[in-house]
Length: 469
Ligand SMILES: Cc1ncc(COP(=O)(O)O)c(C=O)c1O
Image 1 (cartoon, rainbow, N blue to C red):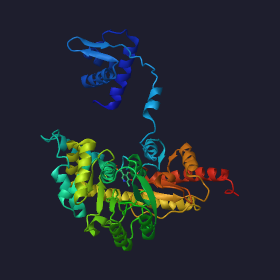
Image 2 (cartoon, helix red, strand yellow):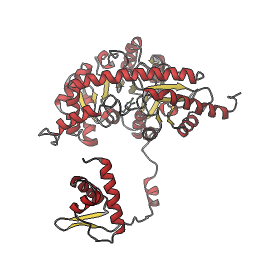
Image 3 (cartoon, rainbow, N blue to C red):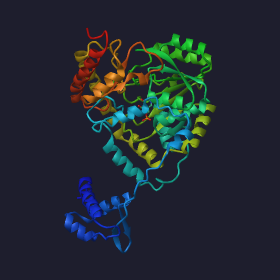
């Protein structure tokens, strides 16, 4: 049977042969290698293919496989680039750190995407193989996306298919939307705390994020009114449903007020509805889109959180001229989302696998959030948080004076990945926070991870002047 570990073993053997051979030396035939290494022809071919791709071997059709010359890496002087590049327009705002955290071994309280046990890998494999067999799988796509997928997204929030533009996840959607609406130099209001990826997009586009703090009921309307009075902002970015990082939901009684304030200011609202299918209750709150009859609200949805991070499919849903602008920006950016990915998405969401996945993920996340909350209350009573109502995150307030980066670093050394809260905020803060995600950790590992986190925090607090005693 061909599997990755037998291919890896043959790669090691072949690399050893190449290292011990002279440049141009011929390798034994495939049949001889099979016999010598006790594997089948496909395993040998795949292993040879890898070393050819690496440039360690070269195949000449009809003649065989030969050892090629080792490429010597020239250490070149690239210092001139620093002068040529000058100040960087790219501002990652901590997004790069979050991606790095996701890859760290140990207990994962830093990953905002599902762990392999919850991801829809098997369901996606079946959907992807059906998608790849379509005769039009590799043809170009309508730039707004394939009609059946646009139609599916429109039904999720009660929009029309022509309001929908398919994007590579919500990151791609946020990027195209902000840049299509505002030129560099303009302020943008963010309901805070917020998602660093959205801040990264805004800052990298030369926009100026302005914080509008919220509480357990979402953005505070009186502060939103003040922010519009003090700035010329024409855009508010908000996550009304299961916000990242605090899992909050915009209270029903605030929705009308927020819409009204924005309408009076002549401002658009980007509703980042990234966690629509990650609620703990049977039915999530309706999207803000449904309360809007002025074309103010631009809703962004994504399948990456509930299915898998590499199913890069999301949607921007908007009405009126703003939609044409965003659609044009998407064409400028990267034309369209690859058809096989779009077809995989529609294969999955239009079958029974979709509701099964949403149910499984919702109940697993609810259980994990409860386990995390209980462990925090037990181990870290000096910290506080509002229990999330959905999504994958909890925002833990640290005791006054305790530094979030110091705690995150110390937790990392003990094998627990957590994100420093400062990436999720704008400007000065009264207290430090950590963002704890329960998407990427098994329920049974949460108590141990929180125990280690408590150790880390107590070690940092013990070094914090005025805190320990
Ligand atoms: C609030 C929010 N919006 C957007 C995204 C981007 O998600 P994706 O591009 O995977 O859809 C994330 C990812 O963590 C998020 O938390």
